[in-house]
Length: 340
Image (tube, rainbow, N blue to C red):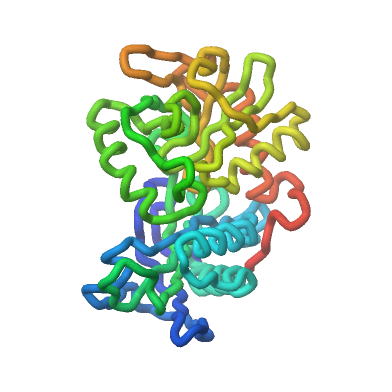
């Protein structure tokens, strides 16, 4: 039985659910892990995560499909990406098979919070890991905690599929050989000032350039970017400091194998924005959010798809990917993991 929640009015925010998963790394090993009802965490004031931001996270969703199944979308890729984040942040990787089992267990325990099919809402799943023991010198922790909590959520951007406006800021997102390619909490901390400033100026998000030359498109503070060229090619930026979005990789596969479109991942220069007919942000939280225009200081670049609705290709990509996720379109092998 579903919880008594107004599913269609949900925003993208935290709602406490009944259960979460926790496992601790002590004396060189992860313990067996357990389900707990306690959402609060007690830490020493000198815990490594509080002093030196040693933390990484993931984001994925559980859905109710058209035939009433509860499923997750490609959790194996989240598990793999979290391993890479842990390695880069000098944290002990949480085993991939245990990651997937923990996700399944948490969703099953919170099954009443999975929004009903057709509501537009989903159950967001947030695995995260952090250095938990006291540290004074700048060094990695030797004890860690891995947790997963869930929260029912609605659309990431208010207004749903209405095109948004991006700006090219004077801030940088990630250094060329830094941590932009992993899902580290510190990447998001440094983007907070930029996004608050963007909102104050009337923009929805920032479109970051590469910090080395500030000539090439990278991503936004919370999502990858895809473009559609005037000859209907789906193009996404290539850079060693871009987070490898699972949604973006899935969309590129869908474009080529379901829609028969040509795809390309390459460096995209800022001057090329005027040659694109569609633009959208993509990620677990947003899925696909169409972009109507980009403001580069005193210059405004409007995409031909306009500010009223998604472009034709963007809409087809969205409909196909969500159709796969919701069980209306047959999925590639291994993409959909059934939970209940």
